[in-house]
Image: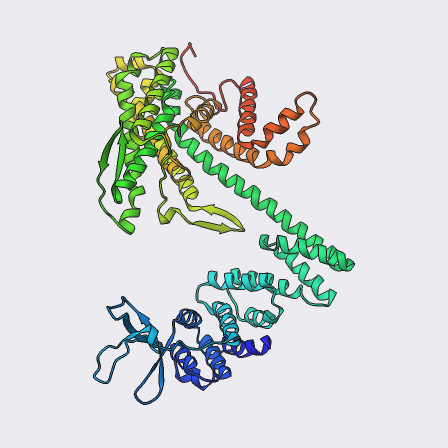
Length: 593
């Protein structure tokens, strides 16, 4: 019975040979006439002809029919017309009526729009057989969609449903499909449907095809097939199912590893931007700025405020007072442009805080590293408490704009647009910093002042101004890192504390004052950290044999993030024992260094 119901749909959809009605009527008219048709068989044929035309109006009209939202209105000549009711109801409960055949307003004899009450109209009838036909048509209609992504999704759904009666539909579609993504989905779906074949050789060939495709979506299904073939004692099919299952698991391993590397690359990009600021303030100026993490938080909170200003505004619990922040009431693309404006705003806000810090405290502590460390540590505590008093102790959420919210799927590896943006923008910042330091007069003054401040002052360089600009530049880069972090996680008063130690490690391992070493170190530490977090839980059961501390290591490995950072820190300590100056030791003419 089901095959009979699908046959008209198959012919109309795949071979484009609709009957006379399809040649003279549009899909809306066909559905409207089918709704008024008294014979269910005739209604099914009309619906199948509508699917063959692949009109976008097919799905919503059929959905309205199934929900009893398609009504029949009696005309003066005794006939009936299918209508949809739309718009607001008036005091009688009447709504505007649209003809289902063309979507135009229904009019009376005088040409005036007609308003009808739903309760006064009979709904278009449908029985179980007709509803099954509608569902089959809706399932198959997506196969003719213009968008290849929609076609591929429909094909995958048909394959996972494993309705063997859909096999002729997919085979016919495979002969005319040209999109590579859809053709791959068709191979997978056809193989899944052939697993229902009673012949073992057909199932073996299908399993070999699934082994070649190695789709992650078939993992659970293959596990069930292994159990079924083992229970049935089919040796050839069982071996083929196990090979397909192993191929899928190996593909999953590769996808997980590629995803881990991508996350490590994005983490390394954030560390790189944050560490570039330290490479300037610590690597060049020899100032240990423990408040660098709070400068990162300044950039993140600036992004949060920019989002509110571009939207409806907000109220800050500033020092126990309700301080309103007015919004520009933007909508659409203008509102989502907040992040573009937040990037320079985050840089300037953090640079301003850094400039005030340098002018107020740091300039009195040059060449006094211990005092500068203690002073900036105190500043970090003050700033954290200020964040709590201004924004509240709880984390705040920064919504990603639509152009950073999606993802790309490359070989089953999900690449988030926000992380891709972070990676690309970090590389642009590195390029810009390299050009500033090596191709501008400001960069020349910075390098001269940092190499030998006394000699630069003798040559007329205003070293105090250069120091202030340099510290502000490094602080601004920290603010950019905070803007990036706001797109990946929540923003809170302690946001920067999770990255300050990693940033210092990046600078030290790369070589103090070395831009190239900072780049390699950032991506290396970020990648290793993510890899360890991904794979430590897998090796945790094997740590129990370690004498004395096996149980401790096994328990610690369950918290992969903590254990991963411990191993990274231990590796860095060992590395610095071998190369105390880092990957690239800075060159200097000073006899003191």
